[in-house]
Length: 142
Ligand SMILES: CC(C)(COP(=O)(O)OP(=O)(O)OC[C@H]1O[C@@H](n2cnc3c(N)ncnc32)[C@H](O)[C@@H]1OP(=O)(O)O)[C@@H](O)C(=O)NCCC(=O)NCCS
Image (tube, protein in one colour):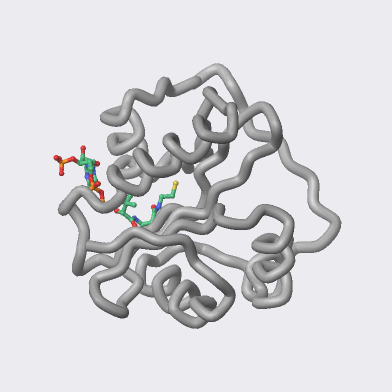
């Protein structure tokens, strides 16, 4: 398995992987090619991919808000699950954040998503059942 940062040339593979993995995404909003290009320019080397040859089989979009390192849109191709790819992506994400002086890592996980909750708890993440996620968006697609 090869782990490398993605470029916008990988966009079609990213969309295919999110679809295969059953992940919700916003192709007309913040996950459009234009928006992903802008995000890659603002924060280069934050889109991490796992490749089997030329096939993108795992992905994590990382964001650094200056205080916390966020792991977003983590997904692994169903045919490649339970092989430790997500764990490796998380380890690499943490290393990257540390190299940027960020030592607090975070992820938002939906209540039903037990596989993802188990994964992050296994990786040492603490669950905060006393915190609710509030959000406000200007457009549905964002
Ligand atoms: C969650 C997901 C990324 C895990 O990817 P993965 O590469 O299979 O995970 P790993 O092989 O690194 O698993 C590591 C650990 O996570 C936990 N885990 C992973 N899948 C699990 C499952 N289906 N049920 C229970 N625990 C699970 C286990 O503790 C596992 O360790 P083990 O295999 O030694 O038991 C993958 O299932 C996926 O893409 N799901 C759909 C998208 C998604 O929900 N993303 C997360 C958004 S927050």
